[in-house]
Image 1 (cartoon, one colour):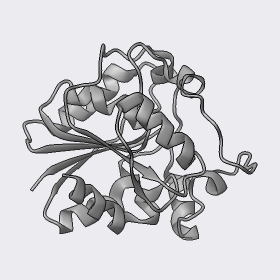
Image 2 (cartoon, rainbow, N blue to C red; image 1 turned 90 degrees about the vertical axis):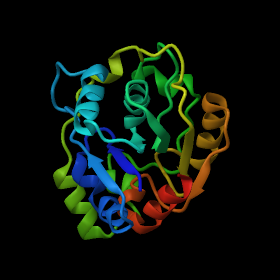
Image 3 (spheres, one colour; image 1 turned 60 degrees about the vertical axis):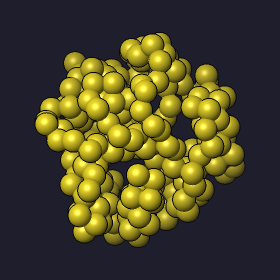
Image 4 (tube, rainbow, N blue to C red; image 1 turned 45 degrees about the vertical axis):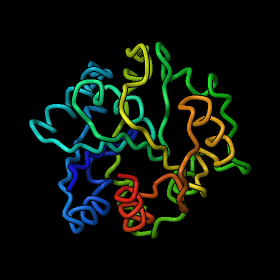
Length: 215
């Protein structure tokens, strides 16, 4: 069985993976989910990776899974520990030397049709049960700009098998744009799953099954 290392996105915490973690444990996988130092202005990408590597400890058979902004951290982890697989779930895919704040323009980001404004539920959690969506927002944290102001430090993508899981109903990372971005950045075709940006809350059992099938 694998050790699944779950890395959250901007402003989230380990809790946001809890339903997927339960599903993976039911499938007899070990789970490591960490709270990144998202509220610490002094913490950058190196400190984010340090947090994950420390939590992994001496575990092996690693499948590193990252959501959204976690895509900037996960490859740094895979460059430091012997991972068997890296899976990006609606993840950002950085290029060497690229700053997260420049990533949107560099990838030719094209937003989904419709103006969702500042409505986080409409943009990110539209397919999550209302009570769970409200709880997810209540548990969200501030996200400093420190990690997105830093150049991504690797010279190349780490030599680890990589898969990308695209969410077909994602209003933040629209499917057509994401397919192109993944081809351009990783040279692979994205795998796909129904669900919005926070598929870990809207379809946790399906996501856990897909993560297992990718191993």
